[in-house]
Image: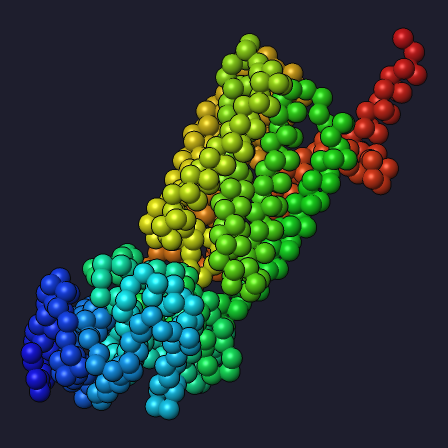
Amino acid sequence: MMTGVTADSSADIFASVDVLSKLSTVSSETNTKFGGDVVNTFLSTASNLTDNSRTAAWDPKRKTSGAITLLNAIESFVKMLEPSNASFVIETPNILLQGCFFNSTLDKNYTKSFKARLGVSMMINYTDIQHMVENVTNITVSSTVYISLSDLIDVTGNAFQGYFLNSLIQSTSISTGSSITPTGIGISMTFENDNKTQSTDNAVCVFWDKNASSGTSRTGDWSSYGCQTIVTGNVTTCRCNHLTSFAVLMAMTVLQDLLIVSQITQIGLGVSIGALCICLFIEKIVWNSVVKSNISHFRHTALINIAFSLLAADICFVASDFPLVKKWGLLCSGITFLSHFFYLALFFWTLCQSLMLFHQLTFVFHQLRKKMYMTVSFGVGFGCPFLIAMGTFFYYFPRGTYRNDRVCWLKPTGGPIYAFIIPAGTIVIVNFLIMIVVIAKLMRPSVSDGSKAEDKETAKNILKAVLILTPVFGLTWALGFATMQPATKDVSTVFNYAFSIMNAFQGLFILITSCATEKKVRETFLKKIFNIEPKSSSTSTKSEFTSKAAPS
């Protein structure tokens, strides 16, 4: 065992970390047990390496990965402690260890407090431990607090860009002395914030997930999965349904930008929801007057379902912002599923609209029947999104990688987000290709002259909607994907503002392109609601009267 280690150079520090890591790994693989003196020596060595006087000696490029390696080594080695007393305490300058040894007699909660020095405490309900005691004879629960380790760890992963550690790190683990792995153990912890001048509005409880992808060269990342955050003054309470290494993260930058983005989103979503409700109301009023042919029926059916899908998705977006939804994991996952489904339905209905237009103009003498179109459209428009959303949920939810740790949406790293990006991106590309073909067809006199004037006008309206909405939807979600990628603060801010504006006002774009600018819909609505006759109609009537009155 390394004793009295003094490592003043970066090479010495990382060599010492490597030795401790290998020692911990070999001991764990051979299931070796150690007394308190050996564990004390191990922790003293690690304490020397993480002392503030040596922080500057850690290589900046390797310090985070090195500190995480040391954290994992300590957490593993502590589990091999064989205590001589029911309660034990090991203290070094920078690492403190407290724990208890349990057997079949257990009638109180596991509670440990480091508040006097560090403002950290933890509690496990005795019923969780009692459940394990029934299956094994001896259980050791230990809690380790790291005083200076957080100074060596930068938050550089994808999940919490712009955040920093604002508390000490603590690890609580359970050793059973057997092959049984502790599961279903909940823990409640309190942390005092290190930076007491920082706003606690965005505090988030996290744990070190060894299996997560960080977007960097190292393995592992911070995650808030299974943890609930409760802030009271300068104290953050974390309630998690598993055991490992925990800490509290805070946003590094001032929240003014996020506040403005949030306000833009809230205002925009209000406008979008209002616009979509107006759009659906207009469609109800004018339906019987404007739907006179199969192609117009297809067009307005698609429009109603596009508006409905976006309206439902916007409502889910608003609901996900409530604190109650974020705290209830299952409710947040349900909102994530519905958002995924309705946003996909939005894209698939635009695809139905484009394919219908393509078919009508390409196969002039083989027009679609209404029943066939309705069956296929509803199957594609809602069936495909449902299958994709359900498949994504059932595959990733059991693995704990389904939704984002901070918002009720698909996890931005790994597979879940691609279950939205790939279908949506493919549809945008297909719609663009169809637009090119349709524009070419409409410019050919043989096709234009062979169609009814009303159908030709409807086709142009569909083309106009597809021509405008496809880039809007595509650009919006391209910006949304960009906000989830690593970027500098300035670039990230631009993407966040752009996505918030585009996403929030999609409903207004639909109202403008599909109702306000469509002449027949506009005139019919004004006539039915305000009894305003269109100018073209008056002129036509006057011309007809003059023609009849003139002598032959």
